[in-house]
Image (cartoon, rainbow, N blue to C red; front, side):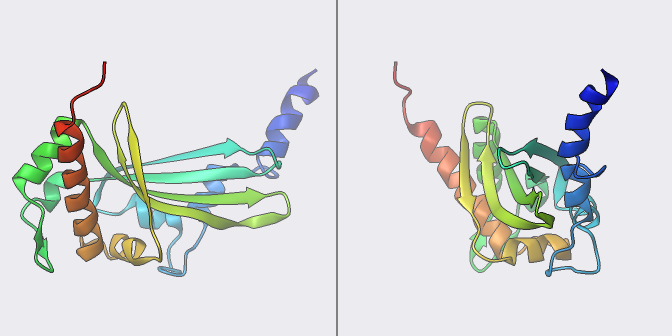
Length: 173
């Protein structure tokens, strides 16, 4: 009886390592000297980072890291003619929105090293989510550097504009 209960956990855990641990141990070409756990966990741009793993129908695991950006620290920052203002921050606060960086890896039975399947910026509230898939590693480079750059500031100002536009649309009844 005990063996029957432990067997699924062992199979999903990838021989003792769960998807979260595997993702945290992963290294990315942007900063190969650090694991993703070290890189994302120590980033001063985030208020917090959460880790999750979900079993997949193919027997693998989809592991996700989500970093919530500290938008208060971005207020007043200007890069390439774009400024994240107190009004931008207020629009996001009014929407109850968090701006997040999301990185997902798939760890398959035949692919123990895993592969990156998604990297995105997401605007998340209790009621809706607006993803913006990222092309390339520019956002992760800024995260690795620990400094907000043009990619993050563009994402933050775009998220504020999206929140303002969404808030000005009357709800349907």
